[in-house]
Length: 113
Image 1 (cartoon, one colour):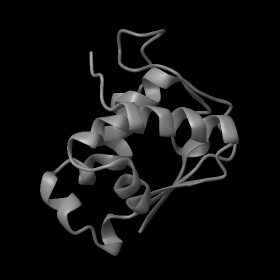
Image 2 (cartoon, one colour; image 1 turned 90 degrees about the vertical axis):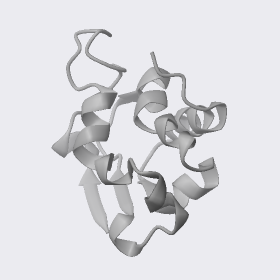
Image 3 (spheres, one colour; image 1 turned 30 degrees about the horizontal axis):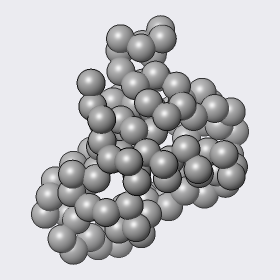
Image 4 (cartoon, one colour; image 1 turned 120 degrees about the horizontal axis):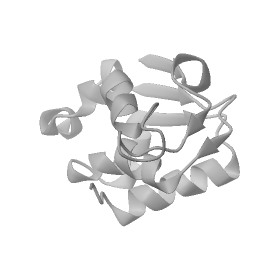
């Protein structure tokens, strides 16, 4: 199992979908590549093991935008359902609002640009 302190290891403001949004830094594609790249294969989702699991600790994260959540997390809905994703990727210390944003993007599916 991998553990990521999102604010410390990445950034406290999760707003940019990609390099073209906002100032382009600390974007969702960079986040996905840095911390969830090992999940970017269909075979992982058929039978995820303990080594595939990730705990994302949101302590210190001040903001998460829908476009970031869609690109970082909704992206994986091409492989699995939201409930399956949340069995592999645990959201720890996420505020109610942060969790609602992430769940909405998981439920509505990937809208990559």
